[in-house]
Amino acid sequence: MSDSEAPAAKKKGGKLKKLLILLVGLVVIGGGVAGGLFAMGIGPFGQHAADEDPSVPQLVVRDGMSSTIAAIARERARRGQIDPRVFKATYVPLEGNFTSNLGGGSAFAQIGIGVSTYYDQRVVENLHTHEMAIRSAVLMVLSQQDPVALTSLQGKERLRQELKNAINSTLTIREGFGGIDDVYFTSFVTQ
Image (cartoon, rainbow, N blue to C red; front, side, top):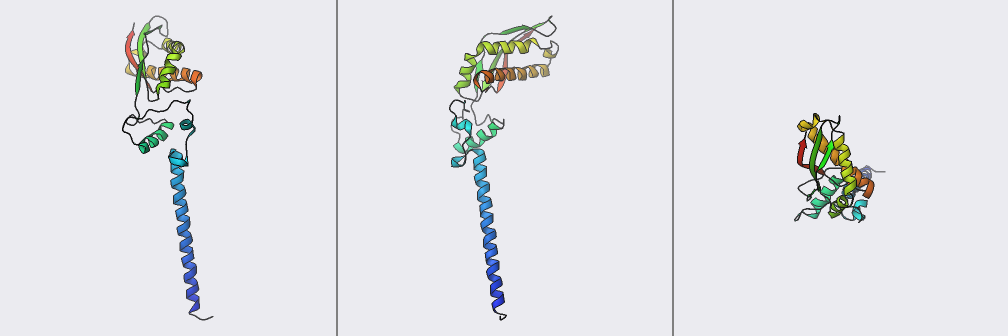
């Protein structure tokens, strides 16, 4: 074998190695992009069960929002991060006030509340359908409150969170989906 043939063989092996590395790199990058699109549920790479199930309430996208931004925001919402700039809120006042004795029995509270949801009209319909069960859950939470705690902002904020959890729990038990994003006081009297 002559000296001129040896370097030519080395060059062929080097080109093949570079081509193989480039091909593997492209496959890895392509797989990463496809995996990202699948995780976000974009295009043919992945549709989540909630998008396919017409019985599950869907988030309501604000007018003028691009479909790509909405898809990314929907994926974040599945992890509990609803973006109010992308989704439209619906506010629903609950009829009548809620009056209950507070923990200890000597004080009482009377509150009016409303709720908000970023989901479609089915959540609002569920609120009306299960109004009696929701009213009962709200009264149960209210009756367990410490009258002194309700005089502070932190006590009221904690009550709002407990009411949200109670309403969502009631709706989940009865409809399989809560959908309430926040609770607001429309009136608040303690004595």
